[in-house]
Image 1 (cartoon, one colour):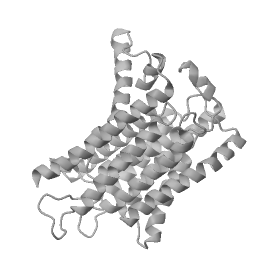
Image 2 (cartoon, helix red, strand yellow; image 1 turned 90 degrees about the horizontal axis):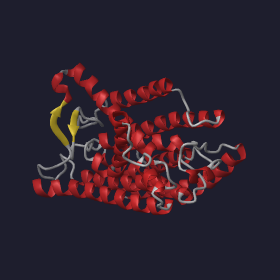
Image 3 (cartoon, helix red, strand yellow; image 1 turned 30 degrees about the vertical axis):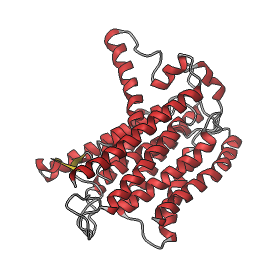
Image 4 (tube, one colour; image 1 turned 120 degrees about the vertical axis):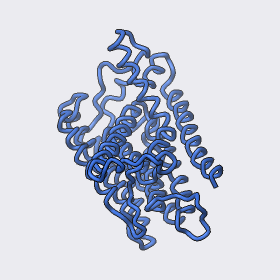
Length: 360
């Protein structure tokens, strides 16, 4: 338990005290946010606000997770390394995207082809390693079985070892792409994505801890147990992420003094996808991150409706911009979305616990 507290505290401390240093550096370099002309008019006042704040989130997470392991004198696990490297790799792609936007002073960053290839390299590397790094008990960080609250009976390797591996790579990369885009779309108002992410990762602390306390093979644990290779490390990195988001939120809350940029949104989305895979909760993640799902759906509905009928369902997509154009204050939208995001995370944890109480 001390590992988790240390990871969260270190992540919080580094983000809280490191962010103002990054703000000073980015301001000095004039690395400010570029605002789209077709966005809400009130957003033009944010032009020039330092961006790429995701750098400090990634560093704080790494310090939190690796530092807590060092303090208690234990080595990071394969699952922990994989989630951390996935978040860092996606964050690096986001950094290059942000840097391109700043240098070229446009809302478009890396060319889609380059971005797709880079994300593919990171995602495929994660997927291949996740399914091929067994621990002492033979369990791997990832599983070829589609998971809901735990692994289901739908096993991708039923189609054969090679085909199953390919299917798992495609499935893992779908999750990574989906969650990175979801966080990226949600990151449109001061503190919105950061606050929701802190709640999501807090939920995963509880889920991972519960899995650790009821791990299959432990003495006194019944037949209703969990097959998770490194649940304690999953809880530690979730704590480091939650702490990093909380510390960054101090400076990212309205009026934001810094934005996370694609550097942060891609890193957090990658971390979320990675945690859902290593904890065997891939589909449950859609409920825990329900607010992110709603934001994505609003964008899909808007685009689909316009292409099919020529009419828009919302005043503007994603969903939070619709409420802005309805006259809601930005802070009001963020707080209400936080409430929805918190409820989704709580319901997800409740469902995870309820399944165990029913089956035991």
